[in-house]
Each structure stands twice: as structure tokens, then as C-alpha cells.
Image 1: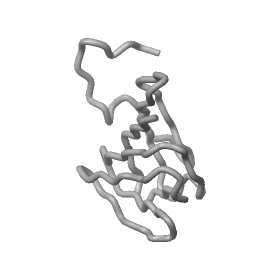
Image 2: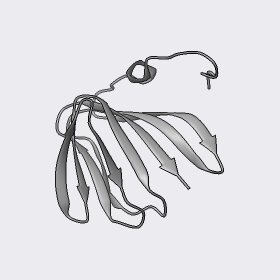
Image 3: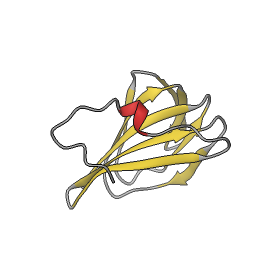
Image 4: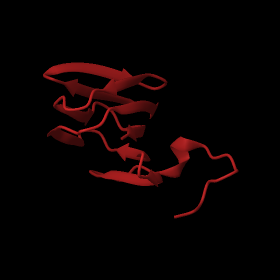
Length: 105
């Protein structure tokens, strides 16, 4: 993995869309949490699951539907949402979208 320490990087440019796929790139992995960039093609998603930690999503491009405890919310470029620990959640690409996912342990 190319190190981004002490230099700038356009986050949305760190992953590219691929047809019918989800692409990810881990930026930081520490005992205290992770930061990952994702690119989802339209219609792609992550099925409902839970995580033992809070997660923060920042939309870098496009539009997604994030469902938390059965309540869907559309999230678009420039918007963010927090998925609380231990709450069932899923993510689906309404349009192709890129997101920054920050998980804090």
C-alpha cells in the first residue's frame, strides 16, 4: 500500500469504479480503528450486518442508501452518517458512489 503520510491525496481518486463490483482501499489500520475508501457500482451493496464499533461514513461521490435498524436514509455527495455500534445496518448504491469509512474501536 502506498503511504499517504505527510502528503495530500484526493480521497475519491484513491479507488476507481469497476463494473458490478465494490472496490476498497484501506488507508489506515490501527488497534484503535481503520479508515477505508470504497467505490460501489450502481446496485452493489453490503448486506445487513452489525459491528461492535461506531462507524462514520462520508460520501465522496454519488448517492447511497444506508439502512440502520430498518430505517433507510439516502446519503449523497458531501453528506455523512454515523452507524451506531451493534445496530444492524446495510449499504446500497442508488447511483455509483464512493465513501470514506472510519471505524473507531
